[in-house]
Length: 458
Image (cartoon, rainbow, N blue to C red):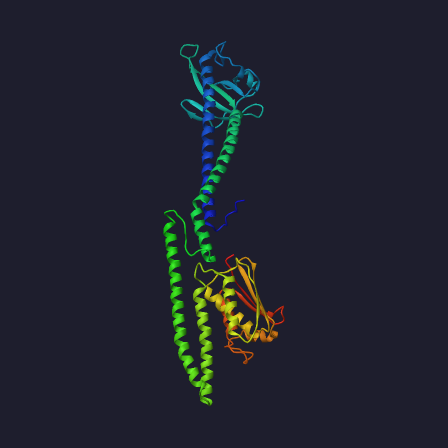
């Protein structure tokens, strides 16, 4: 099922804007068409009334000063059926008390005309008819010569009327058909707009999906053919990604050079003072140790901070851990360790290999220092976008308060074991830079277990 677009999305704005204009255009168009149809129907109705009015006038002959005779010259069944909706009446002008001459359909009802508009000698308007009918009225004054020579001409007002319910019925039928036709047209247009917007924005969705893959480490550049409007964006993004990778690579090189530049003199000084005795030599040795630890810490932290925003970084966890497992136990030849590695093949870290080696290497090396015989290394996907690496040993372990102290910068709990004591603090800082978590807990082997949560590409 197609997901509804978010209200702040470009898709939603385009669809809603086009739909609003579409509905507004259909509404205005329907209103105009309805008005045009009503005008046309009314004009047709007026033409019928005009035809009857002119036929009535043509058939009229003055019988008396107050009466018109038609003989057989005018007749229509519509005007014979009582309250049929079609009426005529003739009223002599200037004769007070004279009763109007009516069609049989009008029976004894008299049409009262009010506010008629005069156009081309014919007045038109509306009036109340019999049986609660609303009628359209056409009226015209006709002058006949007087029977007596020299007398004033006789003037009669000829009126024809028709029930407008026929007009209203036609208009209602037309409006109903117009409404459903425009509703179907509107739905079709909105569907077409939806399809057009969806299809038109496919290249942008492809760019978004490609960026997600790059961010997750699936690829290192935007690939594929894009429309002319999107191609410059894809080109610039690829250039930006390449530039970012180049900057990070250059930064790593500078950091490595700086580390080499600082560590070599510190090593020389440490070697020199190791052969000397006395307060001064001891003080220099202590300060050199502090400097080396601080250099290791801040260089590792700077290297990780420069790498976390590199797009397309992806490192498979299994090969890195297995490489470390083959190398690190050799640094402790006095022990015979069994290391059980349980890592899914497809699990990958969203970051640089050097940082994963720094994190896992410190933890595995620490486990090798304290383990008696066995180490377990496990990794699993705990939720979308997150993985956990657990490294446990069967060593003496740490009390809860000692675990917190162990992760503090520069805190060493046992000077008998070689090392700077800064490894756990470095792990804590680097994992935090990646938005991860680092915990020390009790291992199921009885010793210490280090739990490292990091972002993944799955």
